[in-house]
Image (cartoon, rainbow, N blue to C red; front, side, top):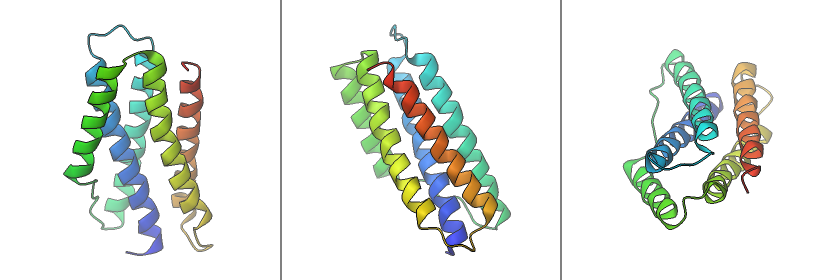
Length: 145
């Protein structure tokens, strides 16, 4: 796969995994009285939007989007369930999200810095926008700590 598609594929995989994990988190919070829920739903919307944008770019390049494997998803689901079961306070949920967002920011920053000069500018902008979304979401979660 060329460098152009590698960047979009990374955005797609990260956004899809973020969406999946955030959906699992919200389903574990269902019926609980958490103030953080609305902000978590906004993060879910953001991940879904970036997943869709990256998917469309891949399809336009005749590439089939590939999500993370079922093992990664299962591990994520189990981790979320365990964490929420142990402590479902807004601070604990925010901490969990901040950890995931921080990993995403670091990975995307590496990809952006490692991008060659001939990378498609629209792809690079999408990567930067995705990283900004994660940074903004992380900042929003910090108020719950």
